[in-house]
Amino acid sequence: MDELVGLFLVAQREFGARVEEVSADQWQSPTVDSEWDVGALVDHVVEENRWVAPLIGGQSVDQAGEDVAAMKADVIDRKTAWDTAAASAADSVSAAGAMDADVSLSRGPTPAREYIAEMIFDHTIHAWDLGAAIGSARPLPDELISTVYSIVEPLGDLSVAFGGMFAPPVSIADDAPLVDRLIALTGRDPR
Image (cartoon, rainbow, N blue to C red; front, side):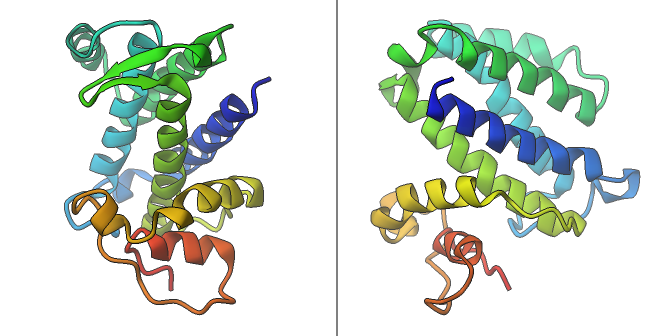
């Protein structure tokens, strides 16, 4: 299996494991992102996964958007929505040649490998966010953290690099665990 695809599946599995841990009374619990409660955070990552199959399949952003809108109509509950969207995304990235083409994103044609690397980053950070919000004791895998950190750390201040999508990095000890250093780079306080 392609290493990037394997990491995507690990990141997906980690987020999904935390979705399964959410209890009925936690969907409105706050997260580290003041704009999202637990339910909205899960909805965001479900939505991202819904886009993967149509985009990897070669659809334009507009065509994919129509498919994604249709998928929303079939939602029974958030856990089922996650399972369905995650399975579809996993199948599409695992297909032969899936990582060899460009995908159509709002910013223009983008290599599928770059798109999936971004998805790995997002799943990893949001798995941490969700875990923190619900009090999960499940650690993120070292391999996943080290790979994402090696991609993100050279980018420097993500609040500058990505136009305000992130808060400035949080100051943290150089010898802090790698997961804490990764989370701090995103402007979240891991303590």
